[in-house]
Length: 504
Image: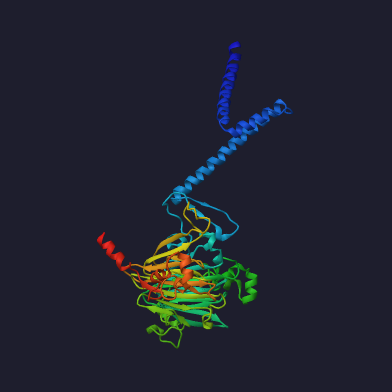
Protein backbone atom coordinates (compact mmCIF):
# COMPACT_ATOMS: atom_id res chain seq x y z
CA UNK A 1 0.00 0.00 0.00
CA UNK A 2 2.93 2.32 0.83
CA UNK A 3 4.49 1.51 -2.54
CA UNK A 4 1.18 2.09 -4.34
CA UNK A 5 0.77 5.46 -2.60
CA UNK A 6 4.32 6.62 -3.33
CA UNK A 7 3.98 6.18 -7.12
CA UNK A 8 1.24 8.84 -7.52
CA UNK A 9 3.22 11.17 -5.26
CA UNK A 10 6.36 10.61 -7.32
CA UNK A 11 4.49 11.28 -10.58
CA UNK A 12 2.93 14.42 -9.12
CA UNK A 13 6.32 15.75 -8.02
CA UNK A 14 7.82 14.91 -11.41
CA UNK A 15 4.99 16.70 -13.22
CA UNK A 16 5.35 19.71 -10.95
CA UNK A 17 9.10 19.79 -11.64
CA UNK A 18 8.56 19.74 -15.42
CA UNK A 19 5.92 22.43 -15.13
CA UNK A 20 8.26 24.60 -13.07
CA UNK A 21 11.10 24.14 -15.56
CA UNK A 22 8.79 24.98 -18.48
CA UNK A 23 7.49 28.03 -16.64
CA UNK A 24 11.02 29.10 -15.80
CA UNK A 25 12.06 28.74 -19.45
CA UNK A 26 9.03 30.70 -20.58
CA UNK A 27 9.71 33.40 -18.00
CA UNK A 28 13.31 33.55 -19.21
CA UNK A 29 12.10 34.03 -22.79
CA UNK A 30 9.55 36.61 -21.73
CA UNK A 31 12.06 38.56 -19.70
CA UNK A 32 14.05 39.08 -22.86
CA UNK A 33 11.27 41.34 -24.10
CA UNK A 34 11.63 44.76 -22.35
CA UNK A 35 7.94 45.50 -22.84
CA UNK A 36 6.91 42.31 -21.03
CA UNK A 37 9.51 42.88 -18.31
CA UNK A 38 8.02 46.33 -17.65
CA UNK A 39 4.50 44.88 -17.64
CA UNK A 40 5.40 42.27 -15.01
CA UNK A 41 7.30 44.77 -12.91
CA UNK A 42 4.23 46.99 -12.76
CA UNK A 43 2.09 44.00 -11.73
CA UNK A 44 4.34 43.27 -8.75
CA UNK A 45 4.58 46.92 -7.67
CA UNK A 46 0.85 47.57 -7.32
CA UNK A 47 0.23 47.88 -3.54
CA UNK A 48 -3.53 47.45 -3.87
CA UNK A 49 -3.15 44.04 -5.61
CA UNK A 50 -3.64 40.84 -3.68
CA UNK A 51 -1.45 37.84 -4.51
CA UNK A 52 -4.22 36.49 -6.72
CA UNK A 53 -4.48 39.86 -8.49
CA UNK A 54 -0.74 39.88 -9.14
CA UNK A 55 -0.82 36.34 -10.54
CA UNK A 56 -3.71 37.29 -12.83
CA UNK A 57 -1.82 40.39 -13.95
CA UNK A 58 1.32 38.34 -14.68
CA UNK A 59 -0.75 35.83 -16.69
CA UNK A 60 -2.23 38.70 -18.70
CA UNK A 61 1.28 39.93 -19.49
CA UNK A 62 2.22 36.46 -20.74
CA UNK A 63 -0.96 36.23 -22.80
CA UNK A 64 -0.24 39.62 -24.41
CA UNK A 65 3.33 38.55 -25.14
CA UNK A 66 2.22 35.35 -26.90
CA UNK A 67 -0.43 37.23 -28.88
CA UNK A 68 2.19 39.78 -29.94
CA UNK A 69 4.59 37.05 -31.01
CA UNK A 70 1.89 35.30 -33.04
CA UNK A 71 0.87 38.55 -34.73
CA UNK A 72 4.47 39.34 -35.67
CA UNK A 73 5.01 35.79 -36.92
CA UNK A 74 1.87 35.94 -39.06
CA UNK A 75 2.92 39.30 -40.43
CA UNK A 76 6.38 37.99 -41.24
CA UNK A 77 4.96 34.90 -42.95
CA UNK A 78 2.56 37.00 -45.03
CA UNK A 79 5.39 39.31 -46.02
CA UNK A 80 7.60 36.34 -46.95
CA UNK A 81 4.88 34.87 -49.18
CA UNK A 82 4.39 38.22 -50.86
CA UNK A 83 8.11 38.46 -51.63
CA UNK A 84 8.15 34.91 -53.00
CA UNK A 85 5.07 35.55 -55.16
CA UNK A 86 5.88 38.96 -56.58
CA UNK A 87 9.66 38.97 -56.60
CA UNK A 88 9.76 42.39 -55.03
CA UNK A 89 8.10 44.36 -52.27
CA UNK A 90 6.88 47.89 -52.00
CA UNK A 91 5.61 50.23 -49.38
CA UNK A 92 2.34 52.08 -49.88
CA UNK A 93 1.74 55.46 -48.30
CA UNK A 94 -1.99 55.98 -47.70
CA UNK A 95 -2.80 59.62 -48.38
CA UNK A 96 -6.06 61.53 -48.45
CA UNK A 97 -5.13 62.93 -51.84
CA UNK A 98 -5.08 60.26 -54.55
CA UNK A 99 -2.35 61.95 -56.54
CA UNK A 100 0.15 61.87 -53.65
CA UNK A 101 0.15 58.09 -53.34
CA UNK A 102 3.75 56.85 -53.57
CA UNK A 103 5.25 53.44 -54.09
CA UNK A 104 8.94 53.02 -53.27
CA UNK A 105 11.22 50.25 -54.38
CA UNK A 106 12.97 48.58 -51.47
CA UNK A 107 15.60 46.70 -53.42
CA UNK A 108 17.72 48.75 -55.79
CA UNK A 109 17.06 47.73 -59.36
CA UNK A 110 14.08 45.56 -58.35
CA UNK A 111 11.21 45.36 -60.78
CA UNK A 112 8.20 47.43 -59.78
CA UNK A 113 4.62 46.72 -60.76
CA UNK A 114 3.34 48.87 -63.61
CA UNK A 115 -0.04 50.31 -62.58
CA UNK A 116 -0.96 51.32 -66.15
CA UNK A 117 -0.01 48.13 -68.04
CA UNK A 118 -2.35 45.14 -68.56
CA UNK A 119 -1.48 41.82 -70.21
CA UNK A 120 -3.91 39.39 -71.83
CA UNK A 121 -2.71 36.25 -70.03
CA UNK A 122 -2.70 37.89 -66.60
CA UNK A 123 -5.34 40.63 -66.45
CA UNK A 124 -8.20 39.29 -68.58
CA UNK A 125 -10.87 36.94 -67.22
CA UNK A 126 -12.68 34.50 -69.52
CA UNK A 127 -16.44 34.98 -69.08
CA UNK A 128 -17.66 32.76 -71.91
CA UNK A 129 -15.80 30.01 -73.76
CA UNK A 130 -17.08 27.46 -76.24
CA UNK A 131 -15.49 25.52 -79.07
CA UNK A 132 -16.48 28.32 -81.45
CA UNK A 133 -15.58 31.46 -79.52
CA UNK A 134 -14.99 33.25 -76.26
CA UNK A 135 -15.51 36.55 -74.45
CA UNK A 136 -12.79 37.89 -72.18
CA UNK A 137 -13.18 40.88 -69.85
CA UNK A 138 -10.36 43.05 -68.52
CA UNK A 139 -10.42 43.29 -64.74
CA UNK A 140 -11.56 46.54 -63.17
CA UNK A 141 -8.97 49.25 -63.63
CA UNK A 142 -9.01 50.07 -59.91
CA UNK A 143 -8.04 46.46 -59.09
CA UNK A 144 -4.71 47.28 -60.70
CA UNK A 145 -4.22 50.67 -59.10
CA UNK A 146 -6.16 53.24 -57.10
CA UNK A 147 -4.65 55.82 -59.45
CA UNK A 148 -7.22 54.75 -62.08
CA UNK A 149 -10.34 55.80 -60.15
CA UNK A 150 -11.19 58.19 -62.96
CA UNK A 151 -12.15 55.22 -65.17
CA UNK A 152 -13.36 52.81 -62.47
CA UNK A 153 -16.85 52.72 -64.02
CA UNK A 154 -15.61 51.52 -67.43
CA UNK A 155 -14.90 47.95 -68.55
CA UNK A 156 -13.22 46.54 -71.65
CA UNK A 157 -14.17 43.20 -73.24
CA UNK A 158 -12.89 41.31 -76.29
CA UNK A 159 -15.13 38.95 -78.25
CA UNK A 160 -13.60 36.32 -80.54
CA UNK A 161 -15.71 34.11 -82.84
CA UNK A 162 -14.63 31.49 -85.36
CA UNK A 163 -15.93 31.34 -88.94
CA UNK A 164 -19.74 31.14 -89.24
CA UNK A 165 -20.26 31.46 -85.48
CA UNK A 166 -23.61 32.76 -84.23
CA UNK A 167 -23.49 34.87 -81.04
CA UNK A 168 -26.89 34.49 -79.38
CA UNK A 169 -29.26 37.47 -78.89
CA UNK A 170 -28.59 39.39 -75.68
CA UNK A 171 -28.71 42.85 -74.19
CA UNK A 172 -26.40 44.62 -71.73
CA UNK A 173 -27.08 46.94 -68.80
CA UNK A 174 -24.37 49.16 -70.28
CA UNK A 175 -23.80 51.38 -73.28
CA UNK A 176 -21.28 49.74 -75.61
CA UNK A 177 -18.72 51.24 -77.96
CA UNK A 178 -18.09 48.37 -80.39
CA UNK A 179 -15.00 48.33 -82.61
CA UNK A 180 -14.39 45.63 -85.22
CA UNK A 181 -10.69 44.78 -84.91
CA UNK A 182 -10.63 41.94 -87.39
CA UNK A 183 -12.99 39.97 -89.62
CA UNK A 184 -16.39 40.46 -91.24
CA UNK A 185 -19.49 40.62 -89.07
CA UNK A 186 -23.23 40.90 -89.34
CA UNK A 187 -24.90 42.58 -86.37
CA UNK A 188 -28.66 42.41 -85.85
CA UNK A 189 -30.08 45.22 -83.72
CA UNK A 190 -33.69 45.27 -82.48
CA UNK A 191 -34.91 48.80 -83.03
CA UNK A 192 -38.50 50.06 -83.07
CA UNK A 193 -40.15 46.63 -83.29
CA UNK A 194 -37.90 45.32 -86.06
CA UNK A 195 -34.37 44.12 -86.62
CA UNK A 196 -31.96 46.55 -88.27
CA UNK A 197 -28.88 44.87 -89.70
CA UNK A 198 -25.34 46.22 -89.98
CA UNK A 199 -22.63 44.79 -92.19
CA UNK A 200 -19.31 45.40 -90.43
CA UNK A 201 -15.77 45.29 -91.77
CA UNK A 202 -12.43 45.63 -89.94
CA UNK A 203 -12.14 49.18 -88.61
CA UNK A 204 -15.89 49.79 -88.23
CA UNK A 205 -17.23 51.44 -85.08
CA UNK A 206 -20.78 51.21 -83.70
CA UNK A 207 -22.38 52.70 -80.59
CA UNK A 208 -24.94 50.33 -78.98
CA UNK A 209 -27.30 51.89 -76.39
CA UNK A 210 -27.87 50.01 -73.14
CA UNK A 211 -30.71 47.51 -73.24
CA UNK A 212 -30.61 47.09 -77.03
CA UNK A 213 -31.05 43.41 -78.01
CA UNK A 214 -28.33 42.39 -80.48
CA UNK A 215 -26.98 39.26 -82.12
CA UNK A 216 -23.71 38.85 -84.05
CA UNK A 217 -22.66 36.53 -86.85
CA UNK A 218 -19.14 35.96 -88.16
CA UNK A 219 -20.01 35.97 -91.86
CA UNK A 220 -16.52 35.02 -93.02
CA UNK A 221 -15.74 31.58 -94.39
CA UNK A 222 -12.38 31.22 -92.64
CA UNK A 223 -11.21 34.29 -90.75
CA UNK A 224 -11.74 34.83 -87.02
CA UNK A 225 -13.91 37.76 -85.93
CA UNK A 226 -12.43 39.94 -83.15
CA UNK A 227 -14.45 42.75 -81.56
CA UNK A 228 -13.41 45.21 -78.84
CA UNK A 229 -16.32 46.28 -76.65
CA UNK A 230 -15.98 49.22 -74.26
CA UNK A 231 -18.78 48.96 -71.68
CA UNK A 232 -20.10 52.01 -69.83
CA UNK A 233 -22.40 50.51 -67.14
CA UNK A 234 -25.65 52.32 -66.37
CA UNK A 235 -26.75 50.19 -63.41
CA UNK A 236 -23.84 49.18 -61.19
CA UNK A 237 -20.62 51.23 -61.44
CA UNK A 238 -17.76 49.12 -62.78
CA UNK A 239 -19.98 46.10 -63.45
CA UNK A 240 -22.10 45.03 -66.40
CA UNK A 241 -24.29 42.02 -67.06
CA UNK A 242 -25.57 40.33 -70.22
CA UNK A 243 -29.16 39.16 -70.40
CA UNK A 244 -30.36 36.44 -72.77
CA UNK A 245 -34.02 36.80 -73.75
CA UNK A 246 -34.25 34.05 -76.40
CA UNK A 247 -32.55 30.99 -74.97
CA UNK A 248 -33.08 27.73 -73.18
CA UNK A 249 -30.82 25.85 -70.78
CA UNK A 250 -27.54 27.10 -72.26
CA UNK A 251 -27.67 30.00 -72.60
CA UNK A 252 -30.36 30.23 -69.96
CA UNK A 253 -33.20 32.56 -70.88
CA UNK A 254 -33.84 35.38 -68.44
CA UNK A 255 -37.52 34.49 -68.72
CA UNK A 256 -36.86 31.29 -66.77
CA UNK A 257 -36.60 33.43 -63.64
CA UNK A 258 -40.37 33.98 -63.74
CA UNK A 259 -42.96 31.52 -62.49
CA UNK A 260 -44.92 29.46 -65.02
CA UNK A 261 -48.16 31.12 -63.88
CA UNK A 262 -46.75 34.48 -64.90
CA UNK A 263 -45.35 33.14 -68.19
CA UNK A 264 -48.60 31.36 -69.06
CA UNK A 265 -50.57 34.55 -68.47
CA UNK A 266 -48.10 36.76 -70.34
CA UNK A 267 -47.54 34.48 -73.34
CA UNK A 268 -50.96 32.79 -73.41
CA UNK A 269 -49.34 29.37 -73.78
CA UNK A 270 -49.68 26.16 -71.82
CA UNK A 271 -47.06 25.09 -69.31
CA UNK A 272 -46.15 22.08 -71.49
CA UNK A 273 -45.39 24.28 -74.49
CA UNK A 274 -43.32 26.67 -72.38
CA UNK A 275 -41.34 23.86 -70.76
CA UNK A 276 -40.54 22.46 -74.19
CA UNK A 277 -39.62 25.94 -75.53
CA UNK A 278 -37.16 26.67 -72.71
CA UNK A 279 -35.49 23.26 -72.78
CA UNK A 280 -34.43 23.09 -76.45
CA UNK A 281 -31.34 25.33 -76.60
CA UNK A 282 -28.26 23.66 -75.16
CA UNK A 283 -25.55 24.75 -77.63
CA UNK A 284 -24.06 27.54 -75.52
CA UNK A 285 -24.15 31.27 -76.23
CA UNK A 286 -21.75 30.99 -79.21
CA UNK A 287 -22.03 28.18 -81.75
CA UNK A 288 -21.35 27.47 -85.42
CA UNK A 289 -24.13 27.60 -88.00
CA UNK A 290 -24.28 26.52 -91.63
CA UNK A 291 -23.31 28.67 -94.61
CA UNK A 292 -26.93 28.66 -95.73
CA UNK A 293 -28.15 30.06 -92.39
CA UNK A 294 -25.50 32.77 -92.49
CA UNK A 295 -26.75 33.76 -95.95
CA UNK A 296 -30.35 33.71 -94.75
CA UNK A 297 -29.54 36.13 -91.91
CA UNK A 298 -27.88 38.59 -94.29
CA UNK A 299 -29.62 41.82 -95.39
CA UNK A 300 -31.78 40.90 -98.36
CA UNK A 301 -30.80 43.82 -100.59
CA UNK A 302 -27.03 43.55 -100.21
CA UNK A 303 -24.37 41.58 -102.02
CA UNK A 304 -22.29 41.36 -98.85
CA UNK A 305 -21.45 37.70 -99.46
CA UNK A 306 -19.19 38.85 -102.29
CA UNK A 307 -17.58 41.59 -100.20
CA UNK A 308 -20.31 44.23 -100.20
CA UNK A 309 -19.78 47.62 -98.52
CA UNK A 310 -19.94 48.25 -94.81
CA UNK A 311 -23.05 49.95 -93.43
CA UNK A 312 -21.39 51.44 -90.31
CA UNK A 313 -21.12 55.22 -90.06
CA UNK A 314 -17.40 55.27 -89.36
CA UNK A 315 -14.43 53.12 -90.34
CA UNK A 316 -11.20 54.22 -88.72
CA UNK A 317 -9.08 52.23 -91.15
CA UNK A 318 -10.42 54.00 -94.24
CA UNK A 319 -11.25 57.51 -92.93
CA UNK A 320 -8.95 60.40 -93.89
CA UNK A 321 -6.34 60.58 -91.10
CA UNK A 322 -6.07 63.52 -88.73
CA UNK A 323 -2.32 63.37 -89.24
CA UNK A 324 -0.12 61.25 -91.48
CA UNK A 325 3.46 61.03 -92.70
CA UNK A 326 5.83 58.25 -93.75
CA UNK A 327 6.43 57.30 -90.08
CA UNK A 328 2.85 56.95 -88.89
CA UNK A 329 -0.83 57.76 -89.17
CA UNK A 330 -3.43 58.97 -86.65
CA UNK A 331 -7.21 58.83 -87.25
CA UNK A 332 -9.79 60.17 -84.80
CA UNK A 333 -13.58 60.06 -84.30
CA UNK A 334 -14.71 62.21 -81.40
CA UNK A 335 -17.72 63.56 -79.53
CA UNK A 336 -17.99 66.42 -82.02
CA UNK A 337 -19.02 63.93 -84.72
CA UNK A 338 -22.78 63.83 -84.12
CA UNK A 339 -23.33 60.59 -86.07
CA UNK A 340 -20.78 58.65 -84.00
CA UNK A 341 -22.92 58.45 -80.85
CA UNK A 342 -19.81 59.17 -78.77
CA UNK A 343 -20.99 62.60 -77.65
CA UNK A 344 -23.18 61.17 -74.86
CA UNK A 345 -20.20 59.67 -73.03
CA UNK A 346 -17.61 62.26 -74.09
CA UNK A 347 -15.38 59.64 -75.73
CA UNK A 348 -13.00 59.84 -78.67
CA UNK A 349 -11.97 56.73 -80.59
CA UNK A 350 -8.56 56.87 -82.26
CA UNK A 351 -6.46 54.59 -84.43
CA UNK A 352 -2.67 54.97 -84.53
CA UNK A 353 -0.43 53.06 -86.93
CA UNK A 354 3.30 53.56 -86.36
CA UNK A 355 5.60 52.41 -89.13
CA UNK A 356 8.32 49.91 -88.21
CA UNK A 357 11.42 51.49 -86.64
CA UNK A 358 9.43 54.67 -85.94
CA UNK A 359 8.10 56.48 -82.89
CA UNK A 360 5.44 58.93 -81.80
CA UNK A 361 6.33 62.27 -80.32
CA UNK A 362 6.54 62.57 -76.53
CA UNK A 363 3.04 63.85 -75.76
CA UNK A 364 0.31 64.15 -73.18
CA UNK A 365 -3.44 64.81 -73.09
CA UNK A 366 -4.83 67.78 -71.21
CA UNK A 367 -8.13 66.16 -70.15
CA UNK A 368 -8.53 62.71 -71.66
CA UNK A 369 -7.60 59.37 -70.10
CA UNK A 370 -6.34 57.06 -72.84
CA UNK A 371 -7.33 53.36 -72.75
CA UNK A 372 -5.19 51.77 -75.48
CA UNK A 373 -5.46 48.27 -76.97
CA UNK A 374 -2.76 46.90 -79.26
CA UNK A 375 -4.43 45.20 -82.22
CA UNK A 376 -1.42 44.35 -84.36
CA UNK A 377 2.38 44.44 -84.29
CA UNK A 378 4.90 44.87 -81.49
CA UNK A 379 6.69 47.76 -79.85
CA UNK A 380 7.12 49.57 -76.56
CA UNK A 381 5.48 52.27 -74.47
CA UNK A 382 7.08 54.56 -71.90
CA UNK A 383 5.02 56.68 -69.49
CA UNK A 384 6.31 59.32 -67.08
CA UNK A 385 4.53 58.97 -63.73
CA UNK A 386 4.79 61.26 -60.66
CA UNK A 387 2.86 58.84 -58.43
CA UNK A 388 5.63 56.23 -58.41
CA UNK A 389 9.23 57.12 -57.66
CA UNK A 390 12.42 55.29 -56.82
CA UNK A 391 13.98 56.12 -53.49
CA UNK A 392 15.86 59.39 -53.84
CA UNK A 393 18.12 61.25 -51.46
CA UNK A 394 18.59 64.36 -53.58
CA UNK A 395 18.85 67.58 -51.61
CA UNK A 396 16.29 69.07 -53.98
CA UNK A 397 13.68 66.35 -53.55
CA UNK A 398 11.40 68.58 -51.47
CA UNK A 399 11.40 71.41 -54.03
CA UNK A 400 10.03 69.36 -56.93
CA UNK A 401 8.50 65.93 -57.57
CA UNK A 402 10.48 63.00 -58.88
CA UNK A 403 9.28 60.86 -61.76
CA UNK A 404 9.33 57.19 -62.55
CA UNK A 405 9.54 55.71 -66.03
CA UNK A 406 6.91 53.03 -66.62
CA UNK A 407 8.10 50.93 -69.54
CA UNK A 408 6.51 47.89 -71.16
CA UNK A 409 6.80 45.78 -74.27
CA UNK A 410 3.66 45.77 -76.40
CA UNK A 411 2.09 42.94 -78.36
CA UNK A 412 -1.42 42.16 -79.66
CA UNK A 413 -4.04 42.34 -76.85
CA UNK A 414 -1.74 44.37 -74.58
CA UNK A 415 -3.65 47.19 -72.87
CA UNK A 416 -2.17 50.31 -71.35
CA UNK A 417 -3.73 53.38 -69.73
CA UNK A 418 -2.34 56.92 -69.80
CA UNK A 419 -3.97 59.40 -67.37
CA UNK A 420 -4.26 63.07 -68.37
CA UNK A 421 -1.12 65.15 -67.94
CA UNK A 422 1.18 62.08 -68.07
CA UNK A 423 3.69 62.32 -70.94
CA UNK A 424 4.14 59.12 -72.94
CA UNK A 425 5.84 57.85 -76.07
CA UNK A 426 5.26 54.88 -78.36
CA UNK A 427 7.74 53.17 -80.66
CA UNK A 428 7.41 50.22 -82.98
CA UNK A 429 9.75 47.27 -83.39
CA UNK A 430 12.26 46.94 -86.20
CA UNK A 431 10.28 44.25 -88.02
CA UNK A 432 6.62 45.35 -88.07
CA UNK A 433 4.22 48.23 -87.74
CA UNK A 434 2.53 48.90 -84.39
CA UNK A 435 -1.25 49.42 -84.56
CA UNK A 436 -3.28 50.62 -81.60
CA UNK A 437 -6.89 51.64 -81.03
CA UNK A 438 -7.56 54.03 -78.17
CA UNK A 439 -10.70 54.94 -76.25
CA UNK A 440 -10.04 58.44 -74.91
CA UNK A 441 -12.32 59.18 -71.95
CA UNK A 442 -13.33 62.77 -71.16
CA UNK A 443 -12.31 63.83 -74.66
CA UNK A 444 -14.29 67.04 -75.04
CA UNK A 445 -11.98 70.09 -74.97
CA UNK A 446 -8.97 67.77 -74.77
CA UNK A 447 -5.73 69.04 -76.28
CA UNK A 448 -2.60 67.11 -77.18
CA UNK A 449 0.66 68.74 -76.12
CA UNK A 450 4.01 67.57 -77.46
CA UNK A 451 7.65 67.87 -76.38
CA UNK A 452 9.20 67.28 -79.79
CA UNK A 453 8.46 68.10 -83.42
CA UNK A 454 6.74 71.19 -84.80
CA UNK A 455 4.82 73.39 -82.36
CA UNK A 456 6.10 71.57 -79.27
CA UNK A 457 5.58 73.32 -75.94
CA UNK A 458 9.28 74.03 -75.30
CA UNK A 459 9.81 75.71 -78.66
CA UNK A 460 6.61 77.70 -78.12
CA UNK A 461 7.92 79.27 -74.90
CA UNK A 462 9.50 82.71 -75.15
CA UNK A 463 13.31 82.73 -75.08
CA UNK A 464 13.71 84.18 -71.59
CA UNK A 465 11.39 81.57 -70.09
CA UNK A 466 13.46 78.83 -71.77
CA UNK A 467 16.71 80.25 -70.38
CA UNK A 468 15.28 80.52 -66.87
CA UNK A 469 13.73 77.04 -66.97
CA UNK A 470 16.83 75.23 -68.27
CA UNK A 471 19.49 77.69 -67.06
CA UNK A 472 20.86 77.33 -70.57
CA UNK A 473 21.06 79.66 -73.61
CA UNK A 474 17.77 79.74 -75.51
CA UNK A 475 19.42 79.35 -78.92
CA UNK A 476 20.87 75.98 -77.88
CA UNK A 477 17.51 74.93 -76.39
CA UNK A 478 15.80 75.82 -79.67
CA UNK A 479 18.40 73.87 -81.61
CA UNK A 480 17.69 70.77 -79.51
CA UNK A 481 13.87 70.88 -79.57
CA UNK A 482 13.13 72.21 -83.05
CA UNK A 483 12.74 69.68 -85.86
CA UNK A 484 10.90 69.60 -89.17
CA UNK A 485 8.79 66.47 -88.63
CA UNK A 486 5.54 66.40 -86.66
CA UNK A 487 3.98 63.76 -84.40
CA UNK A 488 5.71 60.69 -85.88
CA UNK A 489 9.47 60.35 -86.37
CA UNK A 490 12.06 57.74 -87.33
CA UNK A 491 13.30 55.93 -84.23
CA UNK A 492 17.02 56.45 -84.59
CA UNK A 493 19.83 58.09 -82.65
CA UNK A 494 21.33 61.38 -83.86
CA UNK A 495 24.14 60.98 -86.38
CA UNK A 496 26.99 61.83 -84.01
CA UNK A 497 25.76 59.22 -81.49
CA UNK A 498 25.68 56.57 -84.21
CA UNK A 499 29.28 57.33 -85.08
CA UNK A 500 30.31 57.12 -81.44
CA UNK A 501 28.63 53.74 -81.02
CA UNK A 502 30.23 52.45 -84.21
CA UNK A 503 33.69 53.46 -82.94
CA UNK A 504 32.96 51.84 -79.57
